[in-house]
Each structure stands twice: as structure tokens, then as C-alpha cells.
Amino acid sequence: MAEISPLRRRMIEDMTVRNLSPATQRSYLAAVSKLSRYFGRSPDCLELEDIRAFQVHLVAIGISWPALNQIVCALRFFYGVTLGHDAIPERISYARQPSKLPVVLSADEVVRFLEAIPSLKSRTALTTVYAAGLRVSEVVLLKIADIDSQRMVIRVEQGKGGKDRYVMLSPQLLRILRSYWRLARPQRWLFPGRDEDRPLDPTVLHAACRSARLAASLSKQVTVHTLRHSFATHLLENGADVRIIQVLLGHASLASTARYTQVATKTISNTPSPLDRLRLEVAPPG
Image 1 (cartoon, rainbow, N blue to C red):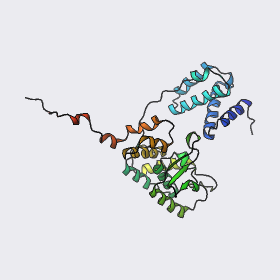
Image 2: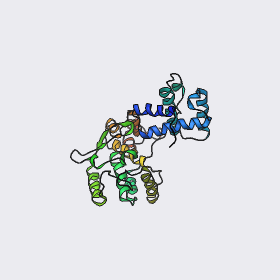
Image 3: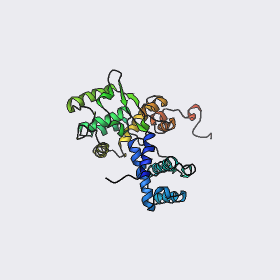
Image 4: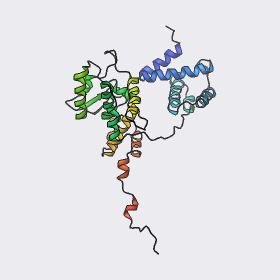
């Protein structure tokens, strides 16, 4: 095994002390390593102009805006926390991400999509995503003990940002989960992988989404997260308070949840136009 450099070890310790998730730690380490490889020097020997040149390079090769901003977060952490520089982090600028509305399925499209998934495990897992608004990383880590049929809630442990929360357990989802359990007999993990001792790999659900979209003849691009978007939008259209939806989704900011008001077409179409208050003739007087 390759020896870990003191600098890398220090960064790992800094991230561990701040309770960053394993996935975040891996992405931060990968970002700093990428910077170091680009210049062929240790990252603690680089300056702000080097970081700026690296960002220009990333944009030139067509990196996505979310991926670029994730690297910015990593570099801000490395230079601000691990190296203790006060001035550099705030001068590593984030990319201004284009504002795009999320793709949302109609209720009929959700049914077509879910019924096009042949695998019992994948269909049940993706149904759970839609029924409770979960992230893919959250649904694969569900355990049998997280399903509380007495209180009709699902416990989501260590969601994004390392936060626990509860979401609703739909009576219909409970029936589906019970049928699934009788057939699949999972032991610890609700959706185990090939090895019963490990949870399902998220890539399995991503692949199931791609296949189901084609099988259901849907023109929209459908991912696991599309079901979460659809969950939030359908709740909003049915009159749920946006602040309740914020809690269910585990959003830290209400602004993240409020964007669903832009795609809640039922709410939009049911909102009267100010024109409806006017008495206006179409044809001008002759």
C-alpha cells in the first residue's frame, strides 16, 4: 500500500474532524490530487494564479458546472482549513451555474415508468424514491429497522450534510414493501446488493432508470433524481406547504425547495390571471 503523505493525512484528519461524509472526502481528495497532477507540484506550493489557471483549464475541457463547483469547494477547504490561508479561499470563485428547471413526470408517466422496471428490487426501490422523495444515496442505505409502520414514517439516517430526518410512510408503499419483503426476504438492508451484507450499489438503480425510460417510451430524460423532483412537485400541486416539503426533502435552504413552484403546472394553471378580473371586449368598437 502506498504511503500517505503528511499533507494528505492532515487534510483527511481535517475532514474527519468536521464530519464530512466519506463520499465528500473522496471527492475533495480527488480534486486536490487533480490540481497537483496538472502542475506536477505539491498543492501547497501553488498560488492563487495557479488555481485560476487550473479553473480556466477545466472550463476549456468542458467540465460540468456542478463538477467545477465541487472542485472549488474542495480547494477552498484545502487552502482555507488544511493550509490555513485566510485570503485565498474567498478568491477561488464559484462558477455561475445556469438555472435549469428540473424534469418532472406526470402521475401517469410515473406509473408507466415504474411498471416498466422488470426487477422486483429495483422497482420497489425506485417506488420508494418517488413515495418518500429520497436521494439515491438514501434509498440504498435504508435498513429494515428504518421502516416504522407504527408511526407510519421512514427514518433516513445521515442524509446529505450528515443529517437524519423522517419522511412519510405511505400506506400504499407499506403494502408494496411488505409484499416485496415476503418475496425477497432481505435481512438487514432493505435493498441489499449481491452480497447480502452490503447495500445495493446506486449504479444498479441508475441503469434501471435508463432501461425503464426506453421501455416506457418516455421522451423526457429520467434519472433517479427525477422521481424526487416529481415527488416534490406533485406534493406542491396537491396543496402541501412548501416548508413541509423542505423538511421532507432535507433541504437546508427554502430557496432550494421554492424552485418547484416554477414547475408545478397544476398550481400555475389554477392561478387566475389578473385579466380574468377585467371586463374586456376582444373587438374594438366599430
